[in-house]
Length: 433
Ligand SMILES: [Zn+2]
Image (cartoon, rainbow, N blue to C red; front, side):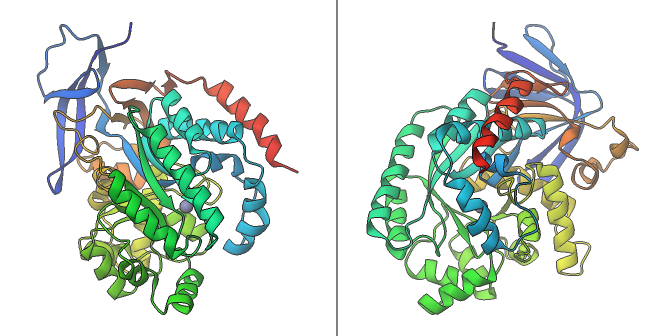
């Protein structure tokens, strides 16, 4: 019989609350079905189906990763230490031409166990054959925001086909618990003005968000300057593409004027520090964006350019990079970092009424972070420092999504890890020549 009520007892609760972070010791959280129904230091144990001991553990919202290509986990380690253009044209694109439904599904499943193990239960993904990424999310018990990456390079027939695939995906996502459809014009370089405009139109018509890569490299900015005589965000503003429903990944090369444009339209920025460092793309001006109160969240990008999905590792790298970037150790503080990986991620995906913090009435997307580990000792009052600067994904002990326990005591409850790793290694053979 499925567990209907779960009591997480006596842990240290850390959650975004209003504009700050709330920390409270000896707190218990009651989950009934898929929702959080009580948060208190005295909840009766009687009448609950399951009790989880929170002693020595942090109770916090599950992590939200706002930019992924989960099926690319199968490309992990196959092409490293390369410049972006040769990385793409000589390695990634030839491998992607061999993709099929089986590869996409098993690549996504591999990422899903990695995400569950490291505390992520919501991801924002752009790729191809996305129905299989959706099927993998359904089978894994996590939340997925899914967009078909539309690339037309100005070609009418390609555009028609891409739009068809995108609409098919929206239809597939409709009514499915834990899935949300997005539209994904790939970037202002790979998607023509017509495709960007049609994407905006469809987003308005169907009430869905837009997921796009913007200003990842300096070359992209130069190419748009050459073609349009405007920088990328000026161009996107000029054609009426920007709005609060846009999740823009990377945003590395921004002028001050573009930061004002992003703020004016309440565009959601997804910061991808590891990928930007590994491909030597540059440093996104997150300190400057946050100073202007832009909503910034965090993404790993695909595992071909990261090379993992550990959001705790990612936020530490992201925070340290900002401190170096502006020569200021106060840049991207631990508290601000915590918001990036929780509530800001939820806001970016339009899910902040449901997830991103631990509050009564919200969905039970909760993780337990084990502090009884050498890298998290000594016991301190500033646990948030431990979370951001000392911890990593392997300190996650328990992962719950939508009220369902996906991992407990570091043991996966829904998925068969051995089987998924074996299948991933098998389908990976198809990608090699
Ligand atoms: Zn990407």
